[in-house]
Image (cartoon, rainbow, N blue to C red; front, side, top):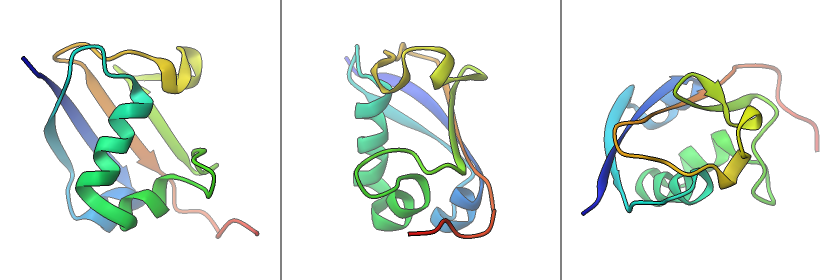
Length: 99
């Protein structure tokens, strides 16, 4: 049975996808990296371009948190999700990145 993950969108990403929060189903044992790809599939290029650089890394202005802890403090994209956990995706509005 799939698990429910609560997602909050803050900053630029909220404006881009027009959604502040939602519950998303994910298979048990899904990693943050896999979960973010589910969100890309759901919300398309606007989400992808606001959160990721080319090459799949997070933009310097993007932060992903699990239960209010930055995933960098955990196991990054390899961090596994459990049912009922909260994922926050924050994209700051800063000057555009070079490149």
